[in-house]
Length: 124
Image 1 (cartoon, helix red, strand yellow):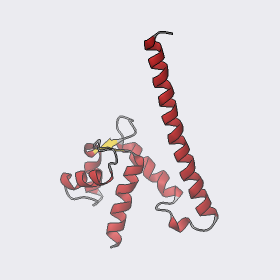
Image 2: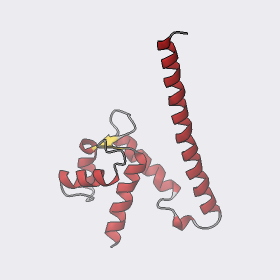
Image 3: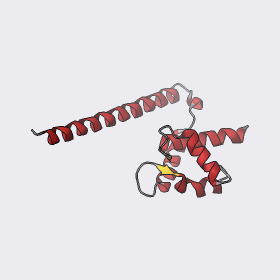
Image 4: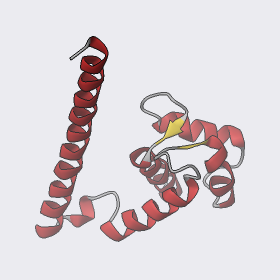
């Protein structure tokens, strides 16, 4: 096996390991959610399962290119239209407040953070 093929194989293994880690985290969260619901503590969850399903549908509809992340351009009109923000600058602030990797793009868990933070602001 030459060095290029070995390097490609190593990259594939790294990608599979990263995917495994992500899947393990999803399973952990799912198990915690199930445990809380089973023990009558679902009120401690930020979102109920049905809410997450509907928010996932909204997120996916905004993700025009199917990349799994959305940017300010995709969020601006909906967030302003729904009253979560009043301007593009406020949308950028919301994105920056949850954007863990600083890419300017947010993934679904970060999207939930925007909705959660906006919801808690309304209750104040």
